[in-house]
Amino acid sequence: MNFDSFINTIVALFIMLAVGFVAGKTKIIDSPASKKLSELILKISQPALIIASLTSVSYSPENLKLGLLTFLFGFVLHGFFAVVAFFACMKVKNLDEKKLMNMLLIFGNTGFIGIPLLDSLLGDIGAFMASFMISSFNILIWTLGIVIMGKGRDDIKLTLKKALINKGTVPAAAGLLLFVLPAVFPTFTIPAFASSAISSLASPCTPVSLLIIGALLSTLTPRQMLSSPKIYYVCLFKLMIIPAAVCVITKLIGFSDVWIIFATTISAMPCATSTTMLAETYDINPAFSAQGVGVSTLLSVATMPAIMWLAQRIIEL
Image (cartoon, rainbow, N blue to C red):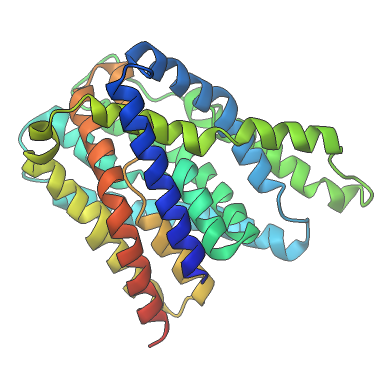
Protein backbone atom coordinates (compact mmCIF):
# COMPACT_ATOMS: atom_id res chain seq x y z
CA MET A 1 0.00 0.00 0.00
CA ASN A 2 1.47 3.34 -1.10
CA PHE A 3 0.47 5.40 1.95
CA ASP A 4 2.50 8.51 0.95
CA SER A 5 0.71 8.68 -2.39
CA PHE A 6 -2.60 8.18 -0.58
CA ILE A 7 -1.93 11.13 1.76
CA ASN A 8 -0.89 13.34 -1.17
CA THR A 9 -4.15 12.46 -2.92
CA ILE A 10 -6.17 13.27 0.23
CA VAL A 11 -4.47 16.68 0.52
CA ALA A 12 -5.15 17.38 -3.16
CA LEU A 13 -8.82 16.45 -2.69
CA PHE A 14 -9.06 18.78 0.31
CA ILE A 15 -7.56 21.66 -1.70
CA MET A 16 -10.15 21.12 -4.45
CA LEU A 17 -12.88 21.05 -1.80
CA ALA A 18 -11.59 24.34 -0.34
CA VAL A 19 -11.48 25.97 -3.78
CA GLY A 20 -15.08 24.89 -4.33
CA PHE A 21 -16.04 26.44 -0.99
CA VAL A 22 -14.48 29.77 -2.00
CA ALA A 23 -16.11 29.56 -5.45
CA GLY A 24 -19.48 29.02 -3.75
CA LYS A 25 -19.00 31.92 -1.35
CA THR A 26 -17.99 34.26 -4.18
CA LYS A 27 -20.93 33.04 -6.34
CA ILE A 28 -18.63 31.73 -9.08
CA ILE A 29 -20.51 28.46 -8.57
CA ASP A 30 -24.09 29.37 -7.69
CA SER A 31 -27.07 27.01 -7.55
CA PRO A 32 -27.84 27.01 -11.32
CA ALA A 33 -24.15 26.49 -12.12
CA SER A 34 -23.93 23.67 -9.59
CA LYS A 35 -26.88 21.88 -11.17
CA LYS A 36 -25.43 22.24 -14.66
CA LEU A 37 -22.03 21.00 -13.52
CA SER A 38 -23.70 18.05 -11.79
CA GLU A 39 -25.47 17.23 -15.05
CA LEU A 40 -22.18 17.46 -16.95
CA ILE A 41 -20.52 15.03 -14.52
CA LEU A 42 -23.40 12.55 -14.44
CA LYS A 43 -24.05 12.47 -18.18
CA ILE A 44 -20.57 12.87 -19.67
CA SER A 45 -17.59 12.69 -17.30
CA GLN A 46 -18.69 9.84 -15.04
CA PRO A 47 -19.56 7.50 -17.96
CA ALA A 48 -16.19 8.37 -19.54
CA LEU A 49 -14.44 7.69 -16.22
CA ILE A 50 -16.06 4.25 -15.97
CA ILE A 51 -15.02 3.35 -19.53
CA ALA A 52 -11.49 4.72 -19.03
CA SER A 53 -11.01 2.77 -15.80
CA LEU A 54 -12.37 -0.48 -17.25
CA THR A 55 -9.98 -0.22 -20.19
CA SER A 56 -6.96 0.93 -18.16
CA VAL A 57 -5.86 -2.68 -17.57
CA SER A 58 -4.96 -5.08 -20.38
CA TYR A 59 -7.31 -7.98 -20.97
CA SER A 60 -6.45 -11.35 -19.49
CA PRO A 61 -8.64 -14.16 -18.14
CA GLU A 62 -7.27 -13.36 -14.67
CA ASN A 63 -8.22 -9.68 -14.91
CA LEU A 64 -11.69 -10.57 -16.23
CA LYS A 65 -12.16 -12.95 -13.29
CA LEU A 66 -10.98 -10.21 -10.90
CA GLY A 67 -13.45 -7.73 -12.38
CA LEU A 68 -16.41 -10.09 -12.17
CA LEU A 69 -15.51 -11.05 -8.60
CA THR A 70 -15.38 -7.34 -7.72
CA PHE A 71 -18.77 -6.79 -9.36
CA LEU A 72 -20.33 -9.59 -7.27
CA PHE A 73 -18.49 -8.46 -4.15
CA GLY A 74 -20.09 -5.03 -4.62
CA PHE A 75 -23.53 -6.54 -3.98
CA VAL A 76 -22.28 -8.33 -0.86
CA LEU A 77 -20.59 -5.21 0.50
CA HIS A 78 -23.58 -2.93 -0.14
CA GLY A 79 -25.83 -5.62 1.37
CA PHE A 80 -23.77 -5.37 4.55
CA PHE A 81 -24.10 -1.57 4.48
CA ALA A 82 -27.88 -1.93 4.06
CA VAL A 83 -28.18 -4.25 7.07
CA VAL A 84 -26.16 -1.85 9.26
CA ALA A 85 -28.21 1.11 7.98
CA PHE A 86 -31.49 -0.68 8.74
CA PHE A 87 -30.61 -1.27 12.38
CA ALA A 88 -28.83 2.07 12.83
CA CYS A 89 -31.89 4.03 11.62
CA MET A 90 -34.66 1.92 13.18
CA LYS A 91 -35.62 4.51 15.80
CA VAL A 92 -35.65 7.57 13.49
CA LYS A 93 -39.25 8.81 13.44
CA ASN A 94 -39.20 11.33 10.58
CA LEU A 95 -39.78 9.22 7.43
CA ASP A 96 -37.92 11.48 5.00
CA GLU A 97 -34.89 11.74 7.29
CA LYS A 98 -34.96 7.99 7.88
CA LYS A 99 -34.96 7.31 4.15
CA LEU A 100 -32.10 9.71 3.53
CA MET A 101 -30.05 8.40 6.45
CA ASN A 102 -30.37 4.90 5.01
CA MET A 103 -29.27 6.15 1.59
CA LEU A 104 -26.34 8.11 3.04
CA LEU A 105 -25.13 5.06 4.96
CA ILE A 106 -25.47 2.59 2.09
CA PHE A 107 -24.06 4.55 -0.85
CA GLY A 108 -20.59 6.09 -0.84
CA ASN A 109 -18.72 8.32 -3.27
CA THR A 110 -17.04 5.37 -5.00
CA GLY A 111 -16.60 6.97 -8.41
CA PHE A 112 -15.57 10.57 -7.84
CA ILE A 113 -13.32 9.97 -4.81
CA GLY A 114 -12.88 6.19 -4.66
CA ILE A 115 -11.22 5.78 -8.06
CA PRO A 116 -8.40 8.33 -7.52
CA LEU A 117 -7.77 7.07 -3.97
CA LEU A 118 -7.63 3.41 -5.02
CA ASP A 119 -5.40 4.38 -7.93
CA SER A 120 -3.02 6.03 -5.46
CA LEU A 121 -3.08 2.97 -3.16
CA LEU A 122 -3.11 0.08 -5.63
CA GLY A 123 -2.30 1.59 -9.02
CA ASP A 124 -4.29 0.86 -12.18
CA ILE A 125 -5.69 -2.37 -10.72
CA GLY A 126 -7.36 -0.37 -7.92
CA ALA A 127 -9.14 1.93 -10.37
CA PHE A 128 -10.03 -1.10 -12.49
CA MET A 129 -11.65 -2.89 -9.53
CA ALA A 130 -13.46 0.31 -8.50
CA SER A 131 -15.06 0.54 -11.94
CA PHE A 132 -16.66 -2.89 -11.53
CA MET A 133 -17.78 -1.85 -8.04
CA ILE A 134 -19.43 1.23 -9.58
CA SER A 135 -21.45 -1.08 -11.83
CA SER A 136 -22.98 -2.88 -8.84
CA PHE A 137 -23.39 0.50 -7.11
CA ASN A 138 -25.45 1.87 -10.01
CA ILE A 139 -27.65 -1.20 -10.24
CA LEU A 140 -28.35 -0.97 -6.50
CA ILE A 141 -28.96 2.78 -6.35
CA TRP A 142 -31.55 2.45 -9.15
CA THR A 143 -33.22 -0.55 -7.50
CA LEU A 144 -32.69 -0.64 -3.73
CA GLY A 145 -32.28 3.15 -3.68
CA ILE A 146 -35.56 3.75 -5.50
CA VAL A 147 -37.34 1.31 -3.17
CA ILE A 148 -36.01 3.20 -0.13
CA MET A 149 -36.87 6.64 -1.55
CA GLY A 150 -40.32 5.44 -2.61
CA LYS A 151 -41.50 4.48 0.88
CA GLY A 152 -44.70 6.38 1.60
CA ARG A 153 -44.78 7.80 -1.94
CA ASP A 154 -47.01 6.62 -4.79
CA ASP A 155 -45.15 8.62 -7.42
CA ILE A 156 -41.77 6.89 -7.01
CA LYS A 157 -41.79 3.51 -8.67
CA LEU A 158 -39.07 1.00 -9.45
CA THR A 159 -39.01 -0.06 -13.10
CA LEU A 160 -36.96 -2.68 -14.89
CA LYS A 161 -35.81 -0.05 -17.38
CA LYS A 162 -34.38 2.16 -14.61
CA ALA A 163 -32.62 -0.82 -13.09
CA LEU A 164 -31.00 -2.02 -16.32
CA ILE A 165 -30.50 1.14 -18.37
CA ASN A 166 -28.98 4.06 -16.50
CA LYS A 167 -25.95 6.33 -16.47
CA GLY A 168 -23.86 3.68 -14.75
CA THR A 169 -24.80 0.38 -16.35
CA VAL A 170 -24.62 1.54 -19.99
CA PRO A 171 -21.03 2.89 -19.84
CA ALA A 172 -20.04 -0.13 -17.70
CA ALA A 173 -21.35 -2.46 -20.42
CA ALA A 174 -19.51 -0.43 -23.09
CA GLY A 175 -16.28 -0.46 -21.08
CA LEU A 176 -16.57 -4.20 -20.41
CA LEU A 177 -17.12 -4.86 -24.13
CA LEU A 178 -14.00 -2.87 -25.03
CA PHE A 179 -12.08 -4.70 -22.30
CA VAL A 180 -12.98 -8.23 -23.49
CA LEU A 181 -12.75 -7.61 -27.26
CA PRO A 182 -9.08 -8.70 -27.36
CA ALA A 183 -10.25 -12.16 -26.24
CA VAL A 184 -12.13 -12.47 -29.56
CA PHE A 185 -9.94 -10.21 -31.71
CA PRO A 186 -6.38 -10.48 -30.31
CA THR A 187 -5.10 -7.58 -32.43
CA PHE A 188 -7.81 -5.17 -31.27
CA THR A 189 -6.69 -2.02 -29.49
CA ILE A 190 -8.63 1.15 -28.77
CA PRO A 191 -7.46 3.85 -31.23
CA ALA A 192 -5.16 6.38 -29.58
CA PHE A 193 -7.43 9.31 -30.45
CA ALA A 194 -10.46 7.56 -28.87
CA SER A 195 -8.52 6.63 -25.74
CA SER A 196 -7.24 10.20 -25.43
CA ALA A 197 -10.74 11.64 -25.88
CA ILE A 198 -12.23 9.30 -23.25
CA SER A 199 -9.47 10.14 -20.76
CA SER A 200 -9.90 13.87 -21.35
CA LEU A 201 -13.67 13.67 -20.86
CA ALA A 202 -13.15 11.65 -17.66
CA SER A 203 -10.53 13.95 -16.16
CA PRO A 204 -12.94 16.67 -14.87
CA CYS A 205 -14.89 14.08 -12.85
CA THR A 206 -13.08 14.28 -9.52
CA PRO A 207 -12.11 18.00 -9.43
CA VAL A 208 -15.51 19.25 -10.62
CA SER A 209 -17.44 16.99 -8.24
CA LEU A 210 -15.33 18.27 -5.34
CA LEU A 211 -15.85 21.86 -6.47
CA ILE A 212 -19.61 21.17 -6.40
CA ILE A 213 -19.43 19.67 -2.90
CA GLY A 214 -17.31 22.61 -1.71
CA ALA A 215 -19.83 25.07 -3.16
CA LEU A 216 -22.59 23.07 -1.46
CA LEU A 217 -20.81 23.40 1.88
CA SER A 218 -20.54 27.16 1.38
CA THR A 219 -24.36 27.43 1.40
CA LEU A 220 -24.55 25.98 4.92
CA THR A 221 -24.18 28.16 7.98
CA PRO A 222 -21.71 27.02 10.67
CA ARG A 223 -24.71 26.10 12.79
CA GLN A 224 -26.17 23.92 10.02
CA MET A 225 -22.85 22.15 9.57
CA LEU A 226 -22.10 21.63 13.24
CA SER A 227 -25.43 21.29 15.05
CA SER A 228 -27.17 18.23 13.59
CA PRO A 229 -26.79 15.13 15.82
CA LYS A 230 -28.33 12.94 13.10
CA ILE A 231 -25.68 13.96 10.57
CA TYR A 232 -22.89 13.24 13.06
CA TYR A 233 -24.55 9.91 13.80
CA VAL A 234 -24.50 9.07 10.09
CA CYS A 235 -20.86 10.17 9.78
CA LEU A 236 -19.82 8.08 12.79
CA PHE A 237 -21.17 4.93 11.18
CA LYS A 238 -20.27 5.82 7.58
CA LEU A 239 -16.72 7.01 8.15
CA MET A 240 -15.56 5.02 11.19
CA ILE A 241 -17.66 2.09 12.41
CA ILE A 242 -18.54 0.49 9.04
CA PRO A 243 -15.05 0.67 7.45
CA ALA A 244 -13.38 -0.54 10.65
CA ALA A 245 -15.83 -3.47 10.81
CA VAL A 246 -15.25 -4.32 7.13
CA CYS A 247 -11.48 -4.24 7.64
CA VAL A 248 -11.64 -6.61 10.62
CA ILE A 249 -14.17 -8.95 8.98
CA THR A 250 -12.20 -9.28 5.72
CA LYS A 251 -9.02 -9.96 7.72
CA LEU A 252 -10.73 -12.65 9.81
CA ILE A 253 -12.21 -14.29 6.71
CA GLY A 254 -8.73 -14.49 5.20
CA PHE A 255 -8.92 -12.00 2.35
CA SER A 256 -5.65 -11.01 0.65
CA ASP A 257 -4.02 -7.68 1.48
CA VAL A 258 -5.23 -6.13 -1.79
CA TRP A 259 -8.84 -7.12 -1.10
CA ILE A 260 -8.67 -5.85 2.50
CA ILE A 261 -7.35 -2.47 1.31
CA PHE A 262 -9.92 -2.33 -1.48
CA ALA A 263 -12.92 -3.22 0.71
CA THR A 264 -11.83 -0.89 3.52
CA THR A 265 -11.27 2.04 1.15
CA ILE A 266 -14.65 1.58 -0.52
CA SER A 267 -16.32 1.37 2.91
CA ALA A 268 -14.59 4.55 4.13
CA MET A 269 -15.93 6.75 1.32
CA PRO A 270 -18.06 9.78 2.28
CA CYS A 271 -21.76 9.80 1.38
CA ALA A 272 -22.57 9.68 -2.34
CA THR A 273 -23.60 12.87 -4.13
CA SER A 274 -26.15 10.71 -5.99
CA THR A 275 -28.29 10.71 -2.84
CA THR A 276 -28.62 14.49 -2.95
CA MET A 277 -29.42 14.40 -6.66
CA LEU A 278 -32.21 11.87 -6.03
CA ALA A 279 -33.44 13.91 -3.06
CA GLU A 280 -33.65 17.00 -5.27
CA THR A 281 -35.38 15.06 -8.04
CA TYR A 282 -38.07 13.68 -5.73
CA ASP A 283 -38.19 16.68 -3.35
CA ILE A 284 -37.26 14.63 -0.26
CA ASN A 285 -35.56 17.10 2.10
CA PRO A 286 -32.62 17.86 -0.24
CA ALA A 287 -31.08 20.23 2.35
CA PHE A 288 -30.70 17.38 4.86
CA SER A 289 -29.15 15.15 2.20
CA ALA A 290 -26.80 17.91 1.07
CA GLN A 291 -25.73 18.42 4.67
CA GLY A 292 -24.93 14.72 5.01
CA VAL A 293 -22.89 14.64 1.79
CA GLY A 294 -21.05 17.89 2.53
CA VAL A 295 -20.19 17.22 6.17
CA SER A 296 -19.18 13.60 5.54
CA THR A 297 -16.89 14.70 2.69
CA LEU A 298 -15.29 17.35 4.88
CA LEU A 299 -14.76 14.95 7.80
CA SER A 300 -13.48 12.17 5.51
CA VAL A 301 -10.32 14.19 4.86
CA ALA A 302 -9.35 13.31 8.45
CA THR A 303 -11.07 9.93 8.87
CA MET A 304 -9.82 8.19 5.69
CA PRO A 305 -6.11 8.42 6.60
CA ALA A 306 -6.97 7.16 10.09
CA ILE A 307 -8.94 4.20 8.71
CA MET A 308 -6.22 3.29 6.21
CA TRP A 309 -3.59 3.48 8.96
CA LEU A 310 -5.77 1.07 10.96
CA ALA A 311 -6.07 -1.20 7.91
CA GLN A 312 -2.29 -1.29 7.55
CA ARG A 313 -1.87 -2.25 11.22
CA ILE A 314 -4.52 -4.99 10.92
CA ILE A 315 -2.94 -6.38 7.73
CA GLU A 316 0.40 -6.66 9.56
CA LEU A 317 -1.09 -8.76 12.40
